Length: 363
Ligand SMILES: NC(=O)c1ccc[n+]([C@@H]2O[C@H](COP(=O)([O-])OP(=O)(O)OC[C@H]3O[C@@H](n4cnc5c(N)ncnc54)[C@H](O)[C@@H]3O)[C@@H](O)[C@H]2O)c1
Ligand SMILES: O=C(O)C(=O)C[C@@H](O)[C@H](O)[C@H](O)COP(=O)(O)O
Ligand SMILES: [Zn+2]
Image (cartoon, rainbow, N blue to C red; front, top):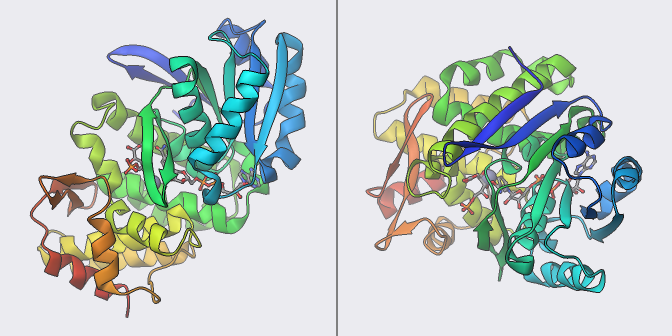
């Protein structure tokens, strides 16, 4: 049931595969299967991932390439900006990269978003491949072609939709991921369950111990199911004209916290707090019960994700949510739960409701 391969369609045609593997060795064959030999590659990675996985990947791909280069940036959200993009453009120009050449994003969501954005804009678009090494990138960000960078600390303000040619994940690379980063990835996975799949959400609740001990089959099942949820959403609405916005559950308030905390908290951590606020609104509107709200709180707590935010005022968080992208005719497109496993987009959530929800995570 949980195979090694998921095919993602774009405009009803097969567009790229997601390969879930135990090591990096299949990467070479996957590139050959796509006819990508004798190309030049730029591997974009960050300063942590470089030390662990860059050489292995370069050694694997080098022999089938016409030249392989790398670009490393300082790890962290503070590098996801146009300054880093400019440095990569300089490298591509210096190496005379042309439209046949390929960018490989080796790392987490920051690397994937940044490298994907470079690939979408350099020479009006060149091919790119996602090699996600964080749980968040495997289960969420490497899929669906949302690429971009932050601008003046506003999240993902500059970006483009650009689909990868391949997503290749080595699930064993999660063994070196710091626990805090692992848990941040769980946050987006819980989100997928809450918005689309109550059974999966229940499965997560029942498998906390196996997930935390990195049991391989459990991880594979979890990532597979999370990818399937995201795949279905992005296939139906690749450019976020409608229901793709459901993937923003927890992000309206989450992104505001991320910005106001100057990226001291991780994306997945801010989404966790944002999901509690959104679930609180669902509860107040009578859609989910007190027990269901408490369960959401508990699963977030079980993965050591933050459940409260202390240093920011509700007013300032609310103010920043209004500067995010998810506005429609001056109204916030808010995502909350109609039930566990079903989310809706609603522009009627008032300032008072949001402030009350933010106050709830400040106690
Ligand atoms: N495009 C999308 O659809 C989408 C979806 C969700 C999140 N995002 C974006 O993704 C970003 C967050 O991604 P992230 O959580 O992966 O952060 P990240 O890319 O910063 O990676 C987290 C940390 O883990 C390190 N790391 C990565 N892989 C490792 C490994 N295997 N072993 C040891 N260390 C490793 C990195 O160096 C970094 O320090 C945010 O910018 C968020 O906005 C995008
Ligand atoms: O793929 C999507 O669509 C998502 O919204 C996934 C989110 O987890 C992710 O954080 C995304 O980058 C948010 O996009 P944004 O357009 O709200 O900045
Ligand atoms: Zn997210």
